[in-house]
Image (cartoon, rainbow, N blue to C red; front, side):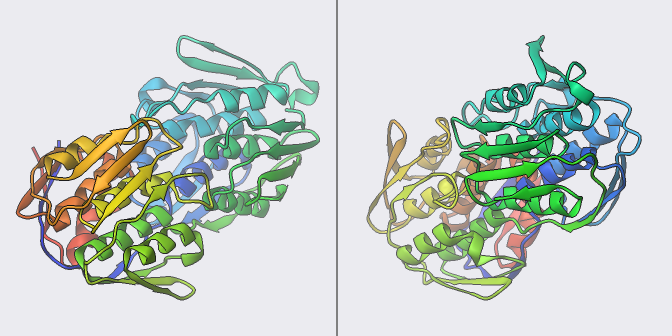
Length: 422
């Protein structure tokens, strides 16, 4: 199993190109199942989760063609409507095939998903929403069995559905399902994330009738069929945010290309509060810092508030900032698993329920640490960049799920990161 060896102490300088967003690409790839003609995508990052999704779609009969960051998908001859446990056990986003399969083909058998161990992310809102649209669903032997064969014209029926919790994948799944439903569907308390908007924009280009994406009420008027289109996936705001924190922590100056500041308002505000200088134009963001940072309080919440996917990175920043900070996690109950590893490096962190109290220390010490999930992995890399001596980050397969060419990009900015294979 691969690991990273990081020798800390280098300031980051230069330019880095931000990849297409994983969290936008995964539902967009699954949306290919809705189209009767080929879908052509660009800015598809080389990531483990992308590979898994393409393999899953290929096993269903989708013809997949890939060259660098471009992917073409032809779902005109789908032969299997099943997503097996073996394929989806490591990736929760696999649940996103459920809505498209049910909407277009009227049947689906999808394994309950796995993924990062950051707390329960139940799929009951997906199931309840599809049941409200008339689908017959039941869970047996770890699989969701779904059918619309009993419905008029075997099509899902439009409905007004209120989601008890804000859920990004739930919003995406139900929005995709509703595009081919009979009648109008209104999703209330919908997720407003940029990745939801990106999916909606592509579905509209495919012929869907969707309004309200980016607000908490999305209206979808069902159509009889969707066709393929050409779409460029939105930039990855979490990858961008991670490099911005890296620049600030190391006292460097980094210009991010293919990055949109309008997707990172909460992150930019906190970086400026910490003492970094952040400037931007249409497609670039520049972060400059002297490395003398002030502790900042963080409270995660659904978009447009501070993103849970940036919590661990800012905790890393706070460990070496001046002062005391509170980091409160409101989305996932197990998302402090990086704390124990940071403590191994000398961080002063105590936990009370869903809040971590972080007291900044002058310097972290390199140590061997273990990654527990995707964003925890990133926070340990950030800690290693500023630590005294060498840090070894083990179990980095999590990183490969969400960061394209991480060590290559960091080294191009002046870091000292080596990938070691066991």
